[in-house]
Image (cartoon, rainbow, N blue to C red):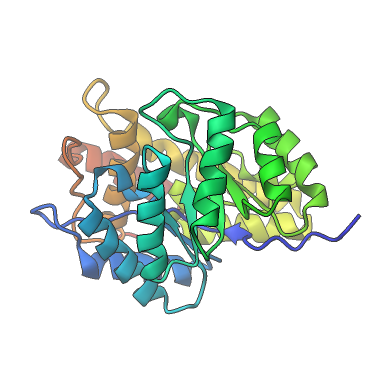
Length: 311
């Protein structure tokens, strides 16, 4: 079998988008987030994903995020940019904008806010790839788009050179394993897990890397986990994963019944970064709310237990 040399591997955090108190893009904080992730050993950056609040940002603010992230990373690692839109034409428009602003690749979901079919999803990815000069990765996130990207759909697209990889945030570990097995004959195709609680298990199964939202808070930990997995040191990888599982308790800080899962998760990441001195505020895009003092104190306790510094 041909040796695999996936184009994207390692830890590629989905970059959070810091906001000012009045809801504008906080450019200085975003630059510090990029510096924090690069210092942590990230091998790539994924801007404007779900963790980047892309669905909440206007096109102008999305463009601003791309400009800041590409400038701050300065070519040190590839910058993948979400072109997450409801339908093909809109996704192409956003993907072309990202390409023009320096994205090294774009990440695209299936169509959503409309009923769709696998034949249409297949055409969606093919049309987007044909319109661009940069690689396209698929983003499998059925909790948001309500379509599951099965291996039977993705692997032919990969074999035809339409897709350069996939970020799997489906939570369907059986499907992910079938995708890994099917990708063994596709040397350049990248299979990345977004299931941050089981990265060690996904790496053992053959994942090329991870795109963990919690990696914003502790990129060093995910890089240590990845490097241990590459060495085959599964005891170390498991111990690091166990520590990160405990750290993810920060998403439980939001008072029950007061925030969506999205707001609780992203609010926790931003609050943790604020406590670590990386971002200035934990402001969220409306209608989400920022976490309060009591919730912030709970997150601070999680950081302390995980051995992470606070400013």
